Length: 143
Image 1 (cartoon, one colour):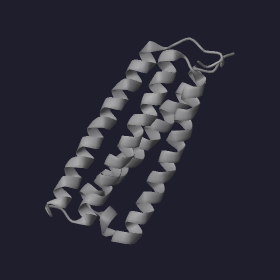
Image 2 (cartoon, helix red, strand yellow; image 1 turned 30 degrees about the horizontal axis):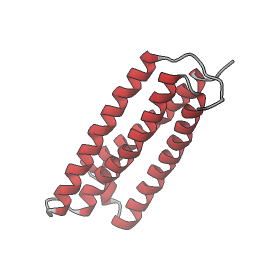
Image 3 (cartoon, one colour; image 1 turned 90 degrees about the horizontal axis):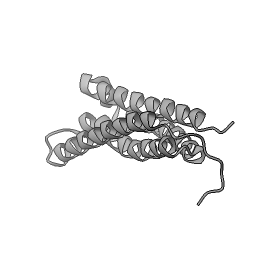
Image 4 (cartoon, one colour; image 1 turned 135 degrees about the horizontal axis):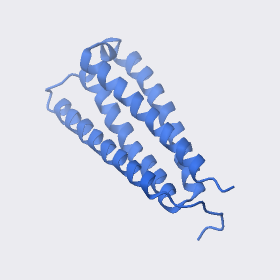
């Protein structure tokens, strides 16, 4: 049991964050479907790269947003802070991974319509997690 002070729980924000967890879980499924298509040779590596990155990032996002939802639900600032740290690490990892994809597979891995869409969704998803964890850290802070 933690000795840190607790703010008031916020079940509404916890429920909204749980919806984002479900959205990230859906993106994980998309990433797995693309990975399976790549493994069956239905897609090339450059076609699949950004969506596989999206799925992997979303899997981490599920954990980040679950931690933020727990922070909201229990009013724990420490959980919200950890979620923020994890969200910042995830955002940095997405940026680095996109650069690695561009270097390893060439610009075509990011230049097509679907490839660009996968990259944009990965970046936006990571940015939303940053925003949510920032809100969680502010709303759970004890005054």
